[in-house]
Image (cartoon, rainbow, N blue to C red; front, side):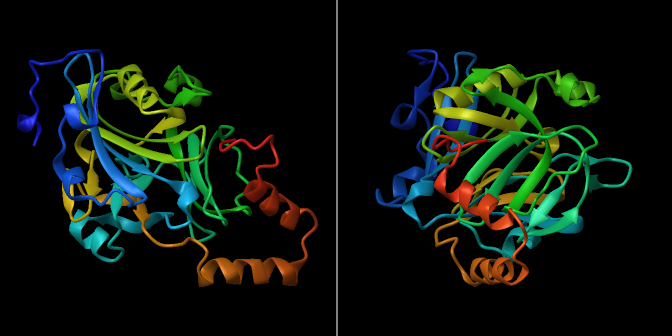
Length: 288
């Protein structure tokens, strides 16, 4: 798929959209809230990108989890999303995620490290860091993946896996990469490349796409990006977690049930915390 890019015609450090590879975007109606684009960096690495307009009210982001490593098409067949990307890192010794996995408000797996991408009960995206070996209060969130590497912080590219207690030396080398970012306006950006790049290269590409806060997910042979029926980058491994996007409202029956549960429990401060997230209590910021 990368052979379709003209790698000898880099006109600037980054070439975005029509000047790069068009692929699936050519057939996407302009009013769709989930759209594809692409980018080639100054070292000729090709990035496939899916952007989601989270303010549209018609994008639902969620995490998927399987207790055992599962072939991609078996995994994705249960969800049929508009887009999907590889989830968090897993440990080779037990084939389980290294960080928490939250699905529909239920903690499916627990691991105490790394940064977080989370979706609250109102469908808003958040990226934040967590304390090593400390639990996260997941009550305000519906979906989340922990165990990721922070790459972009407040618009600055500064990955530091060692400070997050990651020890795998491959994180410091060049590798195929996957990532998720949130823009200042709260939109989601899924970005992946099958070319071998550093975390800093990845961060620079994310920043070029408007990412204000971003994390790196599992990469290498696990790298995968799916868009509207096709794997733009096919994975070479089975997966246990994915982050997916659907084109329909996040305010569904499960959301209503959650709010009903809050009303019944009347837990002190819980309702306030959930609504603070929805209303952007912290100065209207889209990310934590």
